[in-house]
Image 1 (cartoon, rainbow, N blue to C red):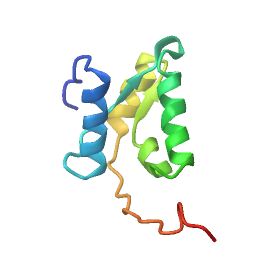
Image 2: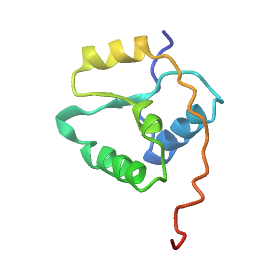
Image 3: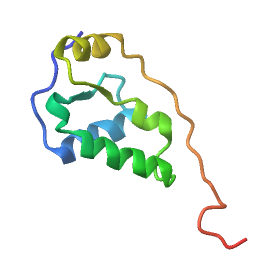
Length: 95
């Protein structure tokens, strides 16, 4: 396994996530969620998936754990997933 990245800004982390979702890299990425600090971020991502701005599988690609050993194990087991892109033409249209 490669060395983990040092701490990055939220913008940089989300760029890493986006590049992974687009298949531009196959490296594991995630968040060590000590004391639930990043719970609001995960709530936002879940909200975006519920509103169809993200696919649920896209949020599942982000490895997360509050336990350092578990987090490193998840990174070591990471396998990139292919998630097909979609266009939902029914969103925002009157029925």
